[in-house]
Length: 441
Image (tube, rainbow, N blue to C red):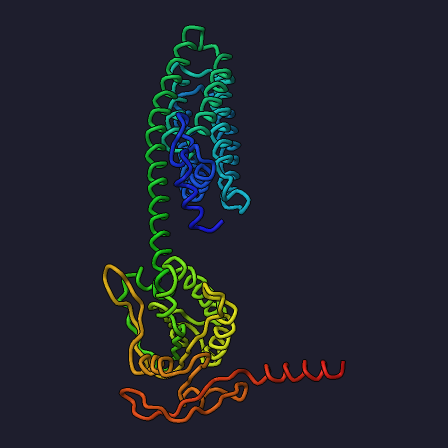
């Protein structure tokens, strides 16, 4: 599926952009894209949270020396050491390639590790009555700071809350009434966290959705530009550049359907449109195959150029090959009467200017003496002939066969020597070889 088809598919899908109550996009591809963006964009936040957890752990380890009894200091030291080791390992894991997109699992492990450490403290140490309520800080931090998506975060924090309450139920300080109060407070902390996370993630999802829509608009705009402009020109135009270039050496081809005016008068418009679509689509493919650029079509006239983009050191032989291929293609396409089409083709080489004209309806065009002369080579040519200037003849190597036409009067140029491009030398060799083989047979 192409990018353009993907854009259309998303628009046609009624679920695209819609979310369930659990904050999940109904379109599976969009949900995967959002989760991938979250994993890629929040890796730094995950590392920050683990560093923050290490700092808070150190602070509470110091404060516990003033709050907990003296005989609990050995446990506090072991808890701080082991939990720090776990957090450091999880932090190091975020730098491993395997966990670059799997770090949410590391964050869940960090939350559950801190939960178990806090629960063991309640169960094994004679803690003050208000000590267990500090766990609500972890609950709120889990929803507000830890970068987990909505459904994953609720599952992690709910599991952490249940584990903590189970450990706390074994403490002497928590009778049934106090334990029920702890459970209610932590439930409310979860509710507050869920409400805050729901709002923030909904905003992030809407921003992601808007970014996708903006990307699609940009894609449509680019597809539109590249449908009417060469791709390098479209790129420059999108960057806000004014596109105008001087080329000291380029080649231009014009091809025209012989007798098109008479054809257009004899047949229905839809038949003529179908004919033009078939032949110009074939010309487009041939132009691209030869590494050249289609410039435009005007009625039944087709214009192509070489040497205007990229490294096209062999653009002149490529243009000669394109002209020969166009001749063959036209002979294989019939008009509505079943008769093959005939072309006049002209080629010239030299300097020219190229640029984008217009503000609302962009058009990439070429102008200069080279363009005018190439056009004259076509209009003054003969049916089923490829007429080239003497400049082209001088620069085409021995691989091509050319026949002199003589001098013709060209408007604005006077008398010019012109030539007919007949074909490639190796084509004749292949035909001779086939003929000899047939004679031997």
